[in-house]
Image 1 (cartoon, rainbow, N blue to C red):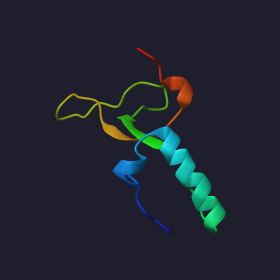
Image 2: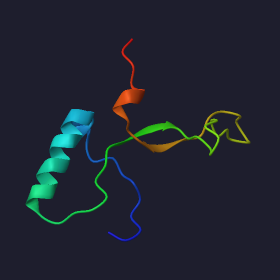
Image 3: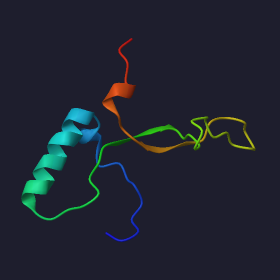
Image 4: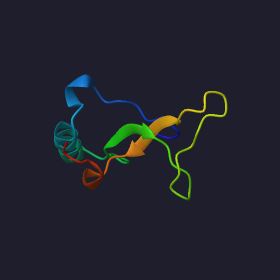
Amino acid sequence: MAGEKVKQLSALFDTPQHAQQFIELAKRAGPCRDLKIRCKAALLDEKGKQILSPKTKMPVIGWADWRPEAIRAA
């Protein structure tokens, strides 16, 4: 468990509801740590601004903690 990178669990668990169910099952099955729902999103700096790639001038995409309040219905 030491030093592992964040990885996508599976295409089967690609929704927050399924990921939460998996986390609950994993916790019941035995000891585990650092189970949290994350999503790919534009990374932000300390001030809340998007981090831009110096080469492409596009936002840097990386893993961010999933927050249900950040998701808005269209």
